[in-house]
Amino acid sequence: MDFDRTKLILHPVRMKIVQSLVNGRHRTAFEIMNHLKEVPQATLYRHLNKLQEAGLIEVVQENPVRGTVEKVYALKQTFHTQLGTISKDQHLELFFTFLAQLMGTYEHYLSTDFDLVRDGVSYRVARMHLTDEEFMELAQNIRRLINEAMENEPSDERMPRNLATIVIPEKN
Image 1: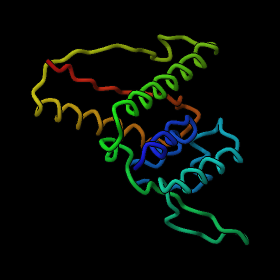
Image 2: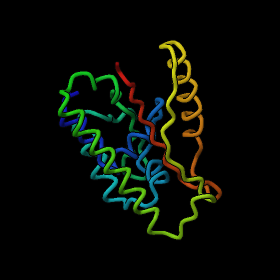
Image 3: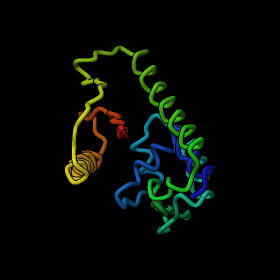
């Protein structure tokens, strides 16, 4: 995956589309729209087309529905497996873009009727001392729990929550 395609994913709407397809999920545009209720239909289709043109998602099935064709989308390749091919400066640019997106999401949250305790808002740095094996076990457990929570379908009782993780080792 080249840098431009990697950067393409970091747009807030496209990142949400990609997140709705992780773990091998196959979804129609309508199903994706149910996960991204704040995104207008035309905007969703525009971003689906960009992701498909970049080769990041693909149509895995087409279903005839009342004289039209309903497409089923899936991720074509994973984001993280190709990150090792870009330069240090490109990594920094992606990281800053990621942080800017987080800041925008948090700023939007703070512009609402927010309640940090009620909404479970937190941010912190947890410094740990782990062997490589201990870290891999921790990462796998966290990934499993996050994946399970991401399987939840939207409902009136469920508030969408963003959980961002950044792991930065300290090298001697």
